[in-house]
Image (cartoon, rainbow, N blue to C red; front, side, top):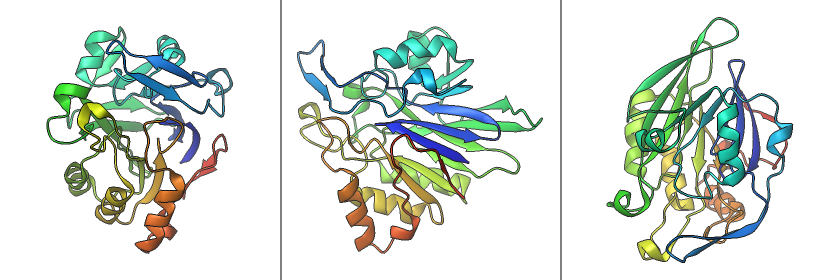
Length: 254
């Protein structure tokens, strides 16, 4: 497996001969004024523009409602991608998107003649009841003969859901965790993604997986950046399993 962190939740995963892109967000730094009047501020642009990524076979879109997971440039990219997987709600809103219910799978042909199976797995974008305010989110698990098992959490804040996924797919080899403890007044400041402490709990549940954090910075509503995460993992004795990526640098994960 090779992974390139583009920035925010956006990463290019090369697995089984396929190029999979998580939550495409390629806009330059700016402020987005939402219909509610709330402002979301993007602080960092993409390390690699979408035009330089080469062919994308699959987009793994955790949800379509928020600019930090699917911005204007990312949305414009979707029609050029053969397979876009997301929530059933996203499939109803965006032509060409295939929605996966929790635990539903789709088999994708690999260039080597094998199959990459993508399974939609549950995620909760905040505390209990967050779906009513922030919408439904999905994660993904990637499996295939001769391939590492990869968990992509999406915008999930629930350690209990991580346990369900770990129990069902163990052993997971690589976990791409959306962390950063995103917070908004809409949910009274409750974390909308994993806090650093929750990411440590998730790492224990996902043993022996290599932990690759994304979506920890680049937006003003993230409260715990990569340095905070690294310190928390160090205190827990988990530094050897944490793999912080340099933006824009393709990295092989053994």
